[in-house]
Amino acid sequence: MVSASHWAQPPTRTELIENLVSGVDRYNPNNVGILEDYLYHQIRTEEYDCLANLAILKLYQFNPDLYNPDVVINILIKALTSSPFPDFNLCISLLDERTANPNADEPDPLPALLPILTSLHNLLQQCRFPAFWSLYRSEKAESLRDNYTVECVGFEDSVRGVVIRAVEGAFKRIGSERLSSYLNLDVGDVKEYVERLGWTVDGAGVISLPSNPDNQPVSTVVQENIQLSQLTKIITHSQVA
Image (cartoon, rainbow, N blue to C red; front, top):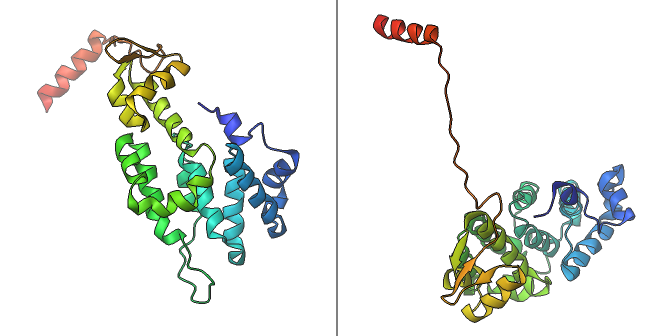
């Protein structure tokens, strides 16, 4: 799990980007090209910097002429796998409603892809992982795969990271077939995948997860200390009522 401090200030962020994100220059439209180049660096290297990407969307809000739908889609793709952080919703909140521009050289791909991206995000948030992969592999999402996520290095592994975080918090043991449907991997590949995580698989294909605070429920006993004077007031009040 990424810590809040790393989310706010990733160690891979350069001093130049830090100055653009944290200083008054974040509202300078002349810097949008630098931030867009930084986004594509994230796409190629599996790095991620939410605040820098939000700065791009804010510049698009203030300067509609700078709007680049491909950049917006790539920002949403990177935010998609940041669960459980609310990055995707933060990005959505900065998107303005746009009408089709009849003078544009090419149609805007965002209106068609935004509902798909939103559905994928919701399925991840709801831990409906097989449904996520079904939609992602569907013909409906073909344009998203062929034109965008194919360029995003490690996208599917990042989604699997979301799955693993959810499974770690909910299970102590899980069947290989069930986990394979969550990860969109063949059952034969699941064993190697989970062993890299330090999980063990028995002869029946049952995977055991290491204990952690989330998958180790601890019973608690709540004791209430009611004084006799308090009990007398309750009984008196009930008789009056």
